[in-house]
Length: 79
Length: 179
Image (cartoon, rainbow over all chains, first blue to last red; front, side, top):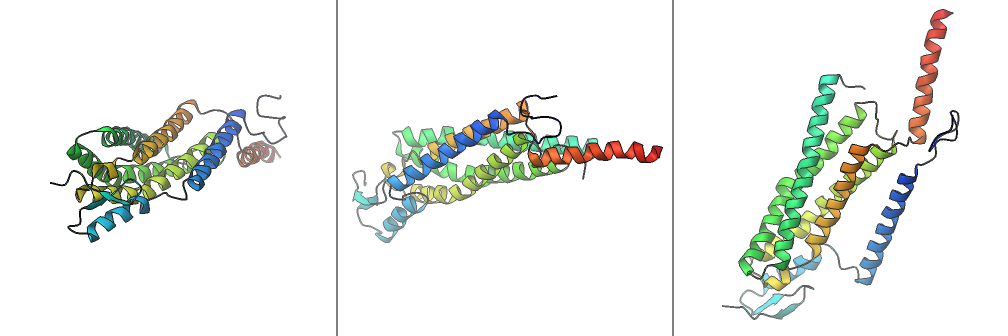
């Protein structure tokens, strides 16, 4: 008896369509993430935020704080 | 090794509780990350990022590991196996990938919480990163839930070979007894 995903009782089953589609989507997601990481200059992870925080702590009293990209910028809401 | 029915039910309950708890925590985390990214009140933004670190460490990480461990117990202790059915395999991959991302992302959350505690400029904190990570995690966990409920058919080659062996053994048993 041949049914979906099987070639026959003695043949090993083929990968079902949903699994192929899922694997394809996962592959596309990985490729998109890698492209975004490369396009963003490899800026990902805690270093992007942490370096800015460390920078600020070292400046104790300086009137500069890290910006979104981790670079210093003039602070406007300092009391 | 097959678990006895009472133990199997206990393991299944534990796995469902851990997985649903993880899903709920991700939804809460997503809500907080949206508040943190969009709020105009500096104290609310800082509070959201500090709370996100606590949720990450105290809820997301334990639930993700517990979900993975109970899932392994559930699959290895039942007839489903770990690599016999594509839906079980897919859930394992989702669980491992999501757990690794959660563990790695705690470093980013710690950095953001440190900045929030240091009363850094909120514009430095308001990153779309937590929202993107939480949304991606939610999609992965919803896919895992769908796989658990639907259990789509499809046996791996390994599972098929195992099934063939069991069938041959089942047929050989009565024949040997008859002989």
